[in-house]
Image (cartoon, rainbow, N blue to C red; front, side, top):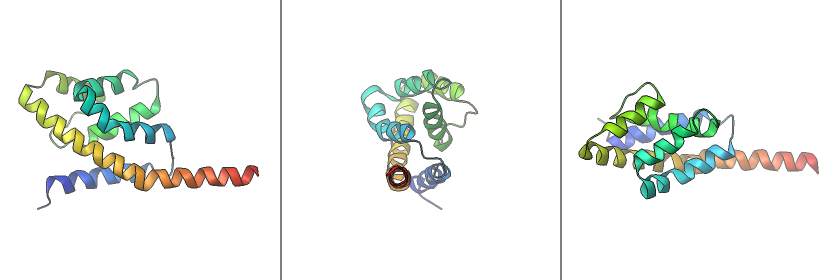
Length: 132
């Protein structure tokens, strides 16, 4: 039996690794801000903010979808249903969801820094060399 943190880390790793072929600096920046966004504003407000921009900006959609898919305690098919579940949750559940979200966001940030940031720098260096 695997510890919960290992299960979450594995899920998040698979999602971040899948984005390796299409580097997106806006996605990377948003993921890096996600843990502090949750801490400062709360999980419901953070997901509400991501959901408000869900259709307009693809990196917000990617971040919210990755967060939603990584949750073990909530299995909702859409971002709207996920956000509504958080809004309607009782205090005890809200605290539990926030802890889980912070753990997920922390793993997302680590993997973005370790997997996607180096790819983005490599792509940037290649484009600079080509223009020189």
